[in-house]
Length: 303
Image (cartoon, rainbow, N blue to C red; front, top):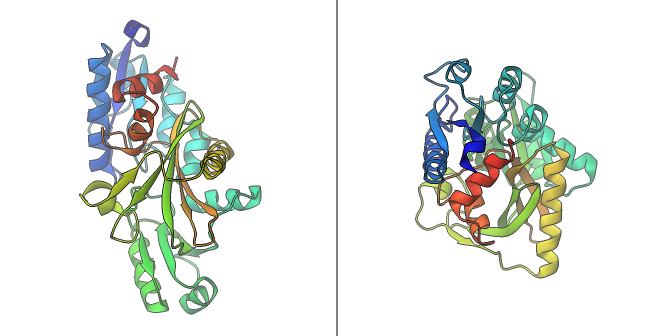
């Protein structure tokens, strides 16, 4: 069976702000593919030009690049041009999911519940006092970053201005989202179907970069302690959001449950973390699928 894949390039690293996470994901994926008898090779586009994929006679690509240049549709377009099959979402789905602001617009238009928000443009005028008066306690997010990079909360106009200036280092457009106090969940998607829901609990207040990758106090509950009806509702919301942005194959949809008991969509991830301890492997494991089996199933989507 492993012969049907031919020579596989595992793309990792890259030059985005999420490079370190990507190196870990790609290494774990590569090891799992090799253990499964697949002819897989590491390929870091930060140090090698993409045309070497053709020169190296690769048959397909497993994308383990997070953030810009790997998750935003640009790489997907290059691979389409080269005629190389690749894992995950196509150009449009990747580009839309990576853009938090356009995702919010889509959720709103489709009637999928998401927190109230404002969009702030670095090159246009904005009024922090007015934004805080409308939204109150907020979370500030660069539009095109993942892994919670550049995110910060703000309780007043002064804090909002500081958070915006920090976020502008990553993006010219920034999403300012009304703070939701409540439980944090993620729904992994495999073969376009929702896996068991995971709840993340962290004493830091929200599931930020440190809680994801550095903290030993973050707790994970899989499956999440929800009623069957709530689980079904959240999984359905996640599948709809995933399809709405044109995502394909595999990924992850993040959401929160507010104090009102309702679920609110946060974002869609088309190349989520893929270390042994990451959330998609955790959800797959709950259905009896090992890390190696998961990686091979994702690669099978390129056949």
